[in-house]
Length: 170
Image (cartoon, rainbow, N blue to C red; front, side):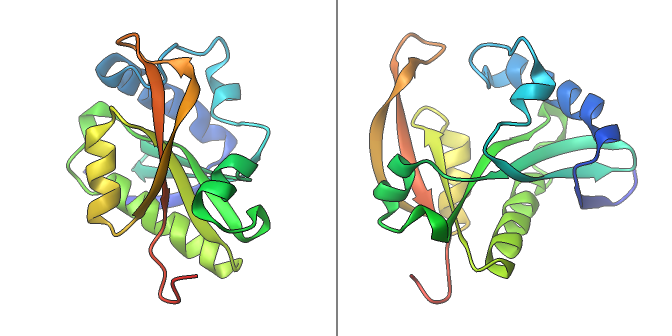
């Protein structure tokens, strides 16, 4: 086993990202419906940057930083220009419990703070492992809202909004 590193996502990571995403979809139904274009799904139009967790050449995890929507900015009570949204965050099913997600979240905070931005995210209420991770890492719950999609178990998705910890608590 090599050492886990967090790197900017490059084109040669995409096949590994899709493979890792496939393990997450099989284990957790994330995303709920497998995308027709997985590489496109991993590169949303609002994307500003993307990072991967790798061990040697194996992609273990993925994270996108994106422009937040106005609804998320409203939920956290800050202008969208002061925020960056964490999206497409996942860790392959075989790489869990190794601190991969925590390392990716730390990278998101570091990159955002370097740009004078505050990270925010949304997570579906049924994703209890992810919610536990965010709360253990000090992310603060700021509210919930109904989404416009249906979960794998047939419920209307309930999205929880979180804001990253910050020394200045803005």
